[in-house]
Image (cartoon, rainbow, N blue to C red; front, top):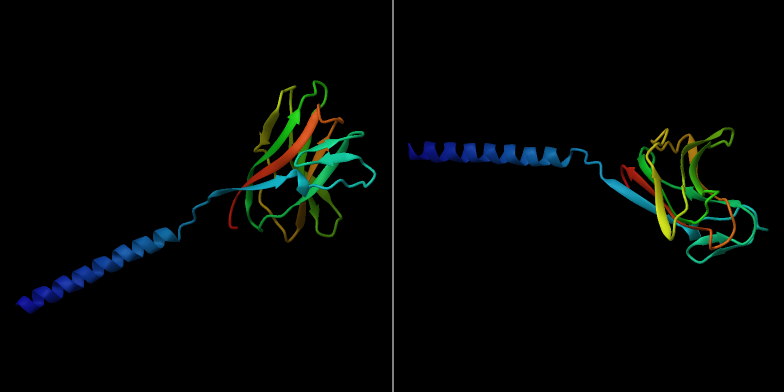
Length: 173
């Protein structure tokens, strides 16, 4: 009788261990979308025209007329962009700095912006402006390539300085 009792206890204990390990394993496989941040500092951006005078010491400011700068946006296929931030200094009452993500077909035949964020109002020091209006928000590298563009509206360090951009996303990587 004692052998049957010990054998039954071992079977029940083994079954319970399998159940517990199965629950732990299945919970570990559940997707946990963690928001990640890709920071793109100003040195990653390039001036499309070589004749534009600018300064880039970790912050970009123009020494001539208004211009735009760009940087590639490289994210894993299938990730979802949740928020885009522009970090800059905007001391202008009449103009703003704009950042947008442009999606272009891999063959270059068609392109369109998927989001835009602009600095607003006059302010002292560095500020952050953001948007969550991104459409389409899921990265599809099989069809598109993505570029971050920034339009600096006025010249001079006292008015506009571009520090960088942040892209918040969910997915692998």
